[in-house]
Length: 199
Image (cartoon, rainbow, N blue to C red):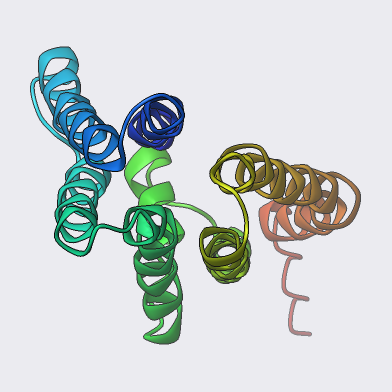
């Protein structure tokens, strides 16, 4: 989550500076903040995580292309490209039968019951679709809407969609899956019935 929040900083800086300075100035300053994103991550954690590295690289590449072609649209497409790449990782891992969130859950909490594996696989699929949908909305905003509206789509709507999914997952677990899991766990933990004695 922190990486996603940090990735917003260069975009907010671009929006603010572009309102008062030429496009090339806004792009250069945003690119510097993109590098600062990775520098802060390294200073704070002693390493730069993969998502931050990808985000910084996209800021530099799209910023450089925007400078070359004198258009801010390419820079505005950076969030959509990032989301498409992330969605591809999620959906690709699901397609090959190794859902990313299953692997992450095992890293955090160790082995998980088979009944939960299917759930985390489903979350991987749903989150991948969520990112793809928002990437499409972001592309439309970058091409058709103002810079302020584009930033609103990237910030507020992005986290709003993610929040709705999280809320939906919580309700799904609480009212549908948890009773099933409890019933299944009780069945699996119940002692076996003794075999009838042969007469």
